[in-house]
Length: 178
Image (cartoon, rainbow, N blue to C red):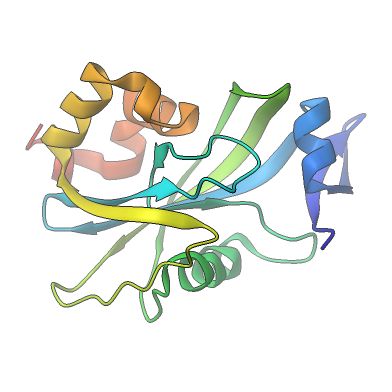
């Protein structure tokens, strides 16, 4: 299935096939969601069949909006499709930009709308095995330590978010516990 995502070519937002955007390293729109529960963050281990960064740990959900889709609609759609999570109210936190080599000759150059959603203790998760091989609720300080100890186990974008943009994503809530 061909998925067209919004990418900038010569300064103009243009629909581009997702894989082509990564092969060419085009700057494109993306969405990332962090689902939290108290001081814990839900992380996912990407399925081994993913075309880049398979088996690495990432934030709860990271994706690309389709050409005509809003970031919030995309966040809700992919939470459901990847993790079977519905009924949350993601809160927009910020827009950040990063560029990272994700292996295999692919580049993520993303302009990312970041959302955070607080989950109830009884949140039901039903991961799609084609997308997600594992999930884990991890205390924020423990996540920071794991990323520090084993950075190659985590996606480049999660490392960038935690290293560069944590204050903009989490504010003082989780950072005070780190």
